[in-house]
Length: 407
Image 1 (tube, rainbow, N blue to C red):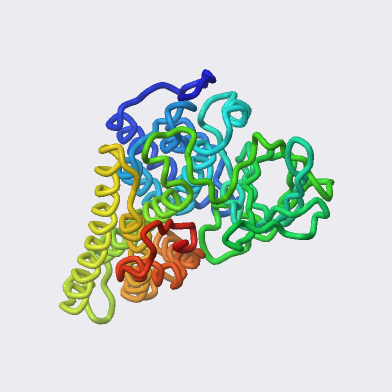
Image 2 (tube, rainbow, N blue to C red; image 1 turned 90 degrees about the horizontal axis):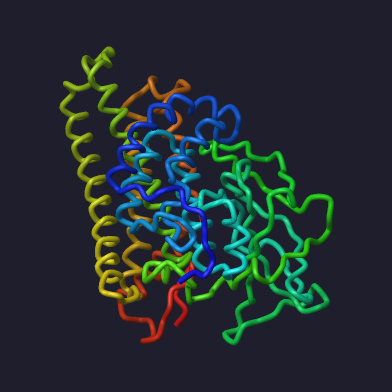
């Protein structure tokens, strides 16, 4: 339990949080186009999400967060993604990146980062794209990092680095031969953005590349760092033991369920009014058949995801950590949901014909879907690792990492 007194933003019930989310969805949706043009969330959207406690809903109570279960947080997150894909993305990223940081950072680090309360935006990339040279009291870091989703509104930056020897060049290896990686955290004002977020979809996430500002190296004190593969959470209870492996799977699944649902809802709305040379869209036997099949695939994928996470919640409630098979389930569910929404999105786009060509809600969600599916966590290699687990081809003490199973 934390020995530091952290500020809290109140203790709303889950029902109150859900009602608040529903109340702000129209405003988030109405600001979507403005956010797209800004290449980041509008300030108003950011404030709505922050004040609703959505950026800290997965953070532990010890730092003032809501510490919702993954299942409960999934229900809220997918509603935000339903309203605006980029807004949903920023919510799930902060709960994955910032959430994991809140679990693993030292007590002194948590006191620094959460000095003003839990609703802190943390952005950056924990995948190592930089280097950390050990010095007294911490590390001197350097590098260029990519995909800093939500970085415009961030207060803290989360940057993965390969640890080097004192020469700054020779990489330190772990006992298993893999490079040692450290996650560092530093204030937003220490970095500058590269103006390179010119992309197909998820435009309003503002996922710019970034580098250090006016410096070749930056000192980061050790209390603001932790190992990429640290396995023991300092706070957050049993569910905190999932770390980055589980929280990223939760986040991407949550987002995909929201945008996939919205694509089908938009198509159903269009079908009620669209008439072309072949008649009314919703009277076409072929369309009705294919739409029903799309619904079945989506709902089945959603059920799989919720079943996997509900099983995980039961394990945590019993005071146990997740098994390697349970983590394989949530990893596979994440990828499967993305495969399904990719197919559903393509079906909706083609069925809508010219209606989806124009700038608007359906086109934006189509672009967002086919951007989210490009994430490295959707790699076939991770699915192969799930297969290895199910086939019993891993060791008894095997553990999941972000990209695969060690053992």
